[in-house]
Length: 463
Image 1: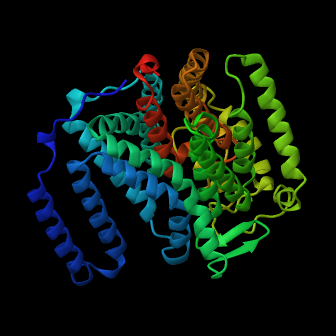
Image 2 (image 1 turned 90 degrees about the vertical axis):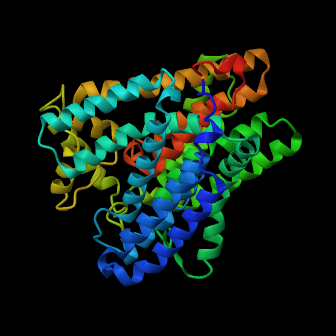
Image 3 (image 1 turned 30 degrees about the vertical axis):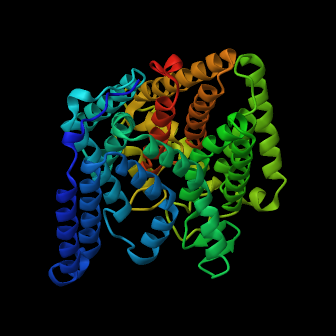
C-alpha cells in the first residue's frame, strides 16, 4: 500500500533550486569567518542539513539516498568522532539523524493528506506513545527524550519512504534498488584501502582505526537480506550471480569485523534464505540447526572464541563492553527492572543505571534491547515492542509464503527480504543497541517499505 504520487507543482522549480545552491555556497564560504571555532562542526552540519532539506523538498527520494549513505559510513563517522571530537555532545552523527528526521517529518506534514501508514505500524505508534507517556510521568532526562525520539523513527521513516517512492520516477526506483544492493560492498572496499594504509589496525578485538567495526557489522547484517534475495530469486542467471557475489563479500566483511552477534546473524540469514516458507515446521528446524552450526563454526575460529572471554580493548567506550560486562549488567538490570515490572523506570533509566554500575558518568547502553525496554518501559512497553515486530515479520512471511505458492519469484524475493530484515534486527538486538541506533533503524524501515512498495499489486495490500 502506497500513497498516491505527489504533484510536481509542489516540487521546487529548477530556477529556485539554482538560487538555493548559490545561497548555500555563500553561507559555506562565510562559516570559517563568522562562526566560533567550537561551533564550526555544528555549523557545517547545519549547512549540510539545509542542503539535504532543500534537495528533499525538490525530490523527496533524495533523503532516502542520504539515509543509505549516512548509514553505510556510520562506522567511519563513529571513528572520526572518537578521534577528533571526543566529548562533543550531542555528537555530530546524532545531530545529523535528528536533522534528517525533522526533514522527513516536515515533508510528511506538507503532504499530510497524502500520507498513509500500513496497519502494522499502529503498534509501533502505540509503543512510541507509551514511551512519551512514561517520559512525562517520570523524571525526564536528555537520554530519555533521545530514546523516545528513536521510537518514532519506524512509523516516520516508513511513511516518508512510501511517500517518496510514490513521487519517484521509474529510473529513481532502479537507482535506489542498485544503491541498496551495492552499498553492501562499500565497507569491504574501505577496509581494502584502510588496512594497507595503516588507517585501520588489526587487533584481537577487531579492526580499529578509521572505521569502527560494530556500526559497520550491524549495518551489513541489516542490508545482507537484499543480496540474499537477489541470489535466490533473481530473474536472470546474471542477477543470481550478482546476488551471490555481493552476499559472499558482505558476509566476509562482517566476519572480518569480528563482531560476534552480527556474524552469527549473517550466517543464520544465509540458511534462512534457502528455506521453503510453505513448510513452517521444517523451516523452524532448519533455522535452529543453522544457528547451532553457525555458532559452532564461529567458536572454532580462535579470534571469535577469544572475543567471548578476553577483556574488551576498544578505545571507544560504546564498543568496549565485552561478555563479562554483560554478565554484570544483564542480571542487575533484570533485578532492578522487576522493581517496576509493569511500567518500568522511564526512558533512559537503563542507560543511566548501567553507566553508574560500571562507573561511567556518561551512561552505557546495556547491549540487550529486550532488557533495556523492560527496564525502561516495563512489561507494557516490551509487549508493545514485541507485538509490533512480530506483526511486521508475520506480514512479510505471509507475502513470502503466498508468493511461493503462486510461483511469483518477484514477490517472494521482497517477502523474504522483509522477513530477513526483521530477523536481523531482532537477532542483533540480543547483544547490541540495534533498536536505539538511528543509523540502523532508519535504513531498516526504508528497506522494509521499499520491499513493500516494489511488490506487485496482487500481494501488496497491507504487505
